[in-house]
Image (cartoon, rainbow, N blue to C red; front, side, top):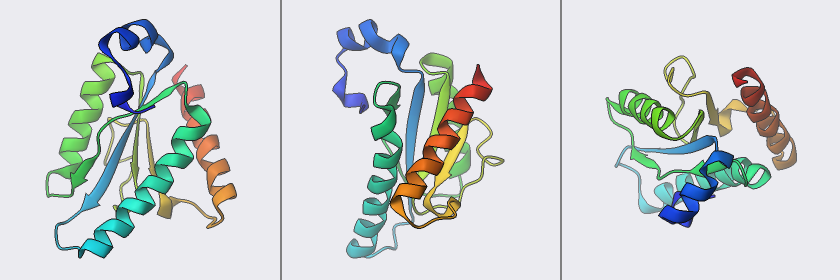
Length: 141
């Protein structure tokens, strides 16, 4: 579910069911042409769908961090730490363009990137994503 789908009242009533924040990282540098930027955003949209759809009642998607800078890793770690301390038990960082590692993003619980999957077939990638998310939840209990 998108963060903007909640009212203050609906969040107060249902927040206990949503324990996972999905933080998209677009990873744009600013030098992309409009078509290149659009392609990256389309890839990220596709990745987010593979994460969001199977777990609609548990994951809340936050606004994306759009541009990569020399401080991106620090910014992402800071955001992850803050959302975990205030609302969520788990944070997943998802990126279609940027190469990120869980070692760099130590405040996240899972880092997902399209390049991190062995298969290029959508069904297999969806299954791998599901397995990784469920393993994260199992480790966290």
